Image (cartoon, rainbow, N blue to C red; front, side, top):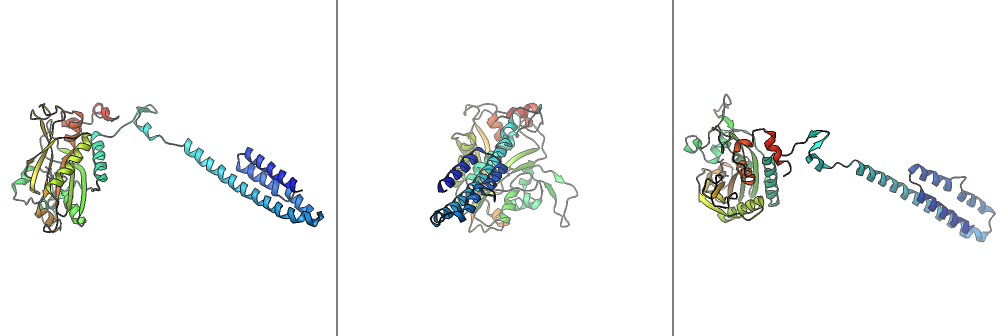
Length: 353
Ligand code: DAH
């Protein structure tokens, strides 16, 4: 009888290995463990067995019953996992297909080169621990000018031709405008955070200007601000060089010139050696071998004060990167107006980048 039990168990295992549906597994289990099954038969026969036989047979039959239960549960779980895996494999979405040329006979779009470069720069700054902030396109005079150390009678207001929004004055007489730069996000950032902090703020900016090959009325900037203790011009240069060599995938030569911006003191124009002609002189660098790329400087104490930050305790740097110019440098584009032309022949060239 003991041998019979072992044989039954082997038989159960063999059959279990050949079946693949949960229904079959459940049927097999009840076939072996059911009231009319072979194991029950053996247990029923126990009453006729000798005391000696009962001693071994009872525990053995129970052990085999338990093992059958266990194997059944395992097999059911296995079948379920297999089904899920198969479903996942068959329903897998190949996201790279979105970039292929035709799906259902229609051409697929891609990211605009400005969006791509913005995402790349965001990744670089995220890896250096910067946050990313967003700000409104419609601003008030306080955020766009006043808090940035540009009072209403300051000649620097004329540096940026502004789109004023008619009829947008508050009862206090404050006018609204389309932001002329992303520097106003510095103000939002300072008022919302306690130092130390560091963030970037990419976005569209607007200037009421005549357009030409290097000027657009809507363009893109990426502002950056770092506020901490004992920050130096050396720190500023380090971050800017790291950024530029990551973007251009090689060490770039930079030079600093003094530059005037009311919100920084000292202020700089950071130029890079022209990558189109390697500094020999070409139309992109206007034959000088250097391209003005990154205005920056040490945050003016008045700006920190407007952001509720004590300039005796904290200092920092800020920069404003022009994304359109960067894209033009990278791809050798000679007219900024192509970027927003909406011409599919132009943008489709960047799909595979
Ligand atoms: N907001 C300036 C512009 O649009 C660019 C700029 C210059 C931003 C110097 C800065 C800076 O943060 O430090 O012309």
